[in-house]
Image (cartoon, rainbow, N blue to C red; front, side, top):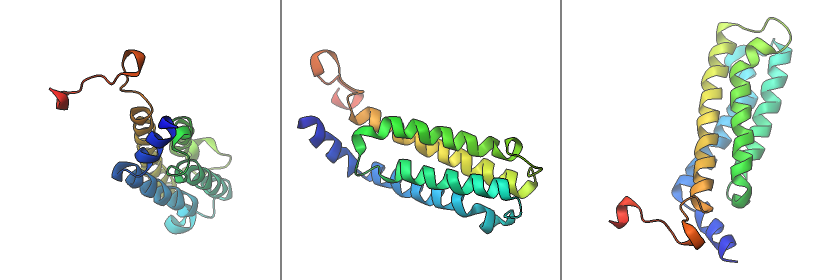
Length: 143
């Protein structure tokens, strides 16, 4: 019960809420980027970005409701961010153009950084600061 309460407290922190909001906006932009930036003529990359953006939003968008699983979901979201960076060169067809590369690189880096921040926050809140027998290690603020 205490672990559940700790997760609930962690989910309402400003940091967690900021990461969740930015992740939702990033996922939404990734999903809509082919039509926003103007490379929707590249069907394979447009579909790839749409699916990756929706998956990213689902993984990190539920940060507040399933905080205890955030660590593993954040690593999957980081993989989506990395995929977004390399997708213009990997998907079928000649889609590596300035618009698609620039959009995917910037969005992928932001998505990866947000996912790593979510993983870090989840680790900090689920015992990453625990010492032996569950006692909290002293931090610089305690000294």
